[in-house]
Length: 143
Image 1 (cartoon, rainbow, N blue to C red):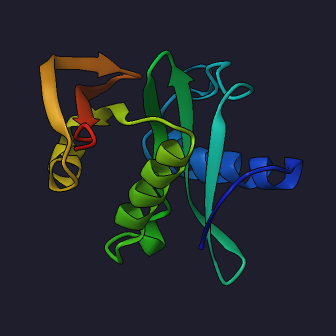
Image 2: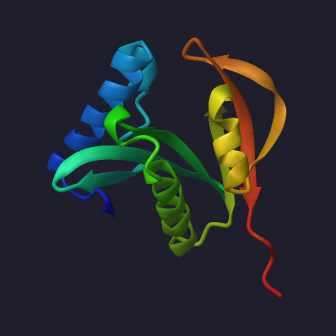
């Protein structure tokens, strides 16, 4: 269902999902969505029966993995796709040696991230015209 993107075709599918969810559904401006950080990011694509339905990107910064642009197309929401996407992304980060995870959650999605172990930190802020909260997750130190 999920894979790291290694081809131009896969990247185009990721951009398609993001355009549908962020630019069309949430009216986020192209300049905010396509922020120039995609070239150095790890991209994840979720497909069901060959149809691109979900995506996310990971940016490694210092000792942390910054999870961004998690999106699930409307027709596939409420089926656990978002949870599986998040878990896949965390697994990829761990394979790459990371145990500190951060993200900017849309405020309405903070409950979703809390259920997956993330903690909110700081005050609510606006990003691309939408209220967000900075959240983090730290894997426990090995015993």
